[in-house]
Every structure is written in C-alpha cells, then in structure tokens.
Image (cartoon, rainbow, N blue to C red; front, top):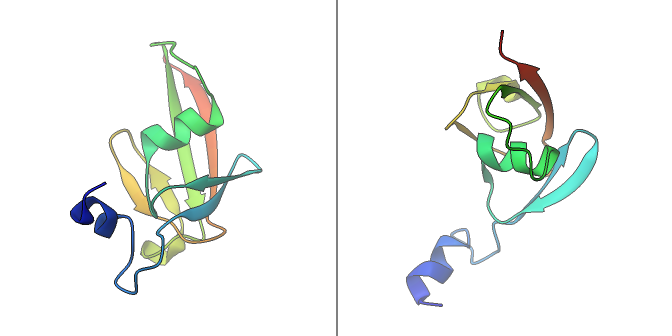
Length: 93
C-alpha cells in the first residue's frame, strides 16, 4: 500500500479511522468514519438487489446536524463510535 493510501486511512495523529457503528441493532466496524447510504444498505440487507425496493435510512448520534437525520441514496454522514442507523426497506408504489 502506498504511503498516500495509508495516510487516507488515518487521522492527523496517525490513528486508524475505523469506526464502530450500529445498524438495525447490530454492531459493525466500518473502515472509515464517512459512512455511505450504500454501505448501510449492504450491512443491513446483504445481497439485496430488488430494484423495486428503496431504503429509508435514519441515523442518530452522528457528527454535525444535531447528530440525527436521514440519509438518501448517494449520500454519506460522518459517524462516530456508537452512531446508530435504522435501515428500513420500502416498496415503490
């Protein structure tokens, strides 16, 4: 791994950016504190690929925006240890 790639995985103090989050009540460790909608859907529903299903993603205890909110497709949020996500499937009408 190049030093630039290694630097992107650490904070300014040289510590790993891995982050422990909770998705639908289950703890997960993600490689970075910038967590995407797509990562969360994959953690909540591994292998899900039905094009008629969208997902509602709510979070709390995150950095910024009062710590809670919703996430849309292609979006991301800065998580911290203990950030909780609720991912719910929704069928299009």
